[in-house]
Each structure stands twice: as structure tokens, then as C-alpha cells.
Length: 218
Ligand code: CA
Image 1 (cartoon, rainbow, N blue to C red):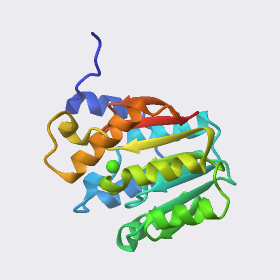
Image 2: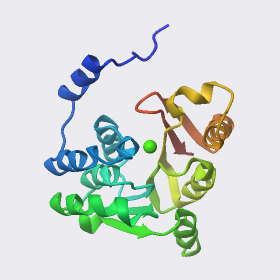
Image 3: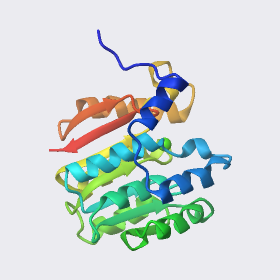
């Protein structure tokens, strides 16, 4: 059976050196995040490029991101959007997101990114109450794991039919395949189980990064 290759350092370096096309601001933002104590929370650059490709493939214009951290994924998506594209970027940390903002500016995409420093549930509920259900094309969920299901349900309502939700860390370093020892693992297992049976979406669980689920709204 063909399975995904286990990437050792040499092969991962090959993947990057033979596919990565970063904007200078993306490379600079990665560099600026490298020394951060939570740098592991940043998505890999190949994943950023993959999400940018998805955004272009579905012709996305309005997107939402839950969990911005220092802003690499928002930057990747914003660069892939047309000039009048929109990223509703939800996070609670000014400390983290302020690291990324200069690089959004450097890349010339600040006008596309609407950063909302507030609990994401409240921001999304506000948008739904505002009549924005069915108006988004793409969503990226990469925040506190126990709330993933709440974010998923809200994003599903915000998306148009044919829109795509990408959910990060669904393999949680492999721990989802073992009995859960933490609330985070249990939450991810429950969501993975639910999505497998969820008739509202088409589904693919990709072993890219720490596991990325793609859910296309039917
Ligand atoms: Ca993540």
C-alpha cells in the first residue's frame, strides 16, 4: 500500500527547495517568528503555499481565519486573494499578532486583513447575526482545540456551498491514534469522528504538517 512518506530532514529540505515560492515578507515573517517560544505554532511554509493554492483554486474572495498567531497563514492567504479579497482574522493575542502586522504591510496586503482581537466565537456569532451566513469562501481553523467544533459549526454556516474549511493539527503529533490523555486530544478525536460521518461536507484528512482536514461544504 502506498502511504505518505516519512519526511526526514533531507527530504523535507528537498520539498522546500523544489517548491517553495515565498514572498520576501513571508520569509522575513518566518525569520521573525523563529525565535519565538511558541514558534512551533506557526504553520510550515509548504502548508501556507498549499492553502494559497486552494484559495486560488476555489476562486476565494472572502475568507476567515481562527487563530492568527504571528500571521503567517493570514499573510499566505491574503497574498493569494484578489486585491479586493478579505480575511476576517480572529485572535485574542495582541502580543502575537503585532509581530506579523509589519509584514502584512510589507507585502502590501494589510488592506485585505481585518484583524479582530476578541474571542472568535463572539466575532463569528456577530457576523452570523449580521446576515453574513453563506458569504465566505474559505476558512482556516487553527486555535484552541476544545473549541474547534464550535468554530467548525460557525464556519460551516458562514461558508457558501462549495466553500472550503481547512482544520489544522488534526493528527496532534500522532496522539489522536492513541487513547486520549489530554482534553486537546479528546477534542480532536471527537471532531475527527464527527467529520468522518458528517453528510454536510466532502472530506479529506491530509498528513501535511500536523494533519490538515479539508472539509468542502456541500
Ligand atoms: Ca496549528
